[in-house]
Length: 173
Image (cartoon, rainbow, N blue to C red; front, side, top):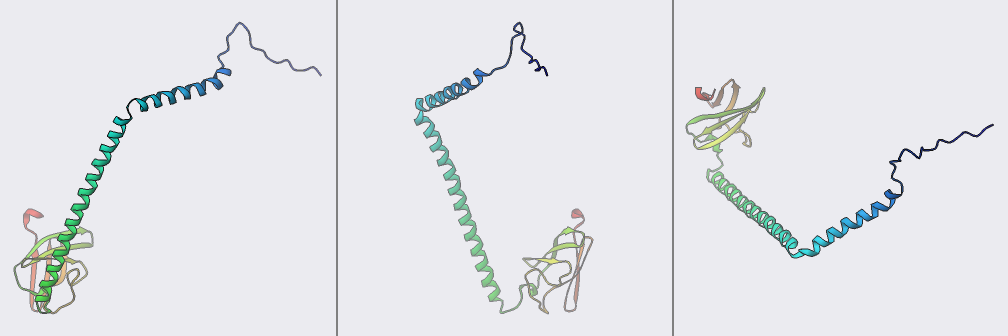
């Protein structure tokens, strides 16, 4: 059997393959890039570190401001809770909802059957959930207003023998 003849490149046509240059050029390019980087770093290290320190100082000041604001907000919330507890204790066990005052429907929120109604009784705001008689977070009391229903833009509340229907103003509909 005759051996197959290997195809040889025509010496008249140049070859565009990079074989030897590929292996020697890569380390040279890497060395040049590394040298440029080191040269730039050696030229102005103080300026580079000064910008890093400035950025760190700005970030620290923003973090510090956020921490201070958080502490202030927590302090205000704790103070408000203490004042609410004092007012609740001062009412001699009577539910704050049972206090009389003008009733006002502030808003109805939600979608479909998951509705909430915000009602002001006197100066205090309460949130009623559809399907629950008493406001969110309140215990049952005979002197409290109970939710009878939320329909459209109106809310029906009842206390003992009183029945009230509160509706949103036409501007809110």
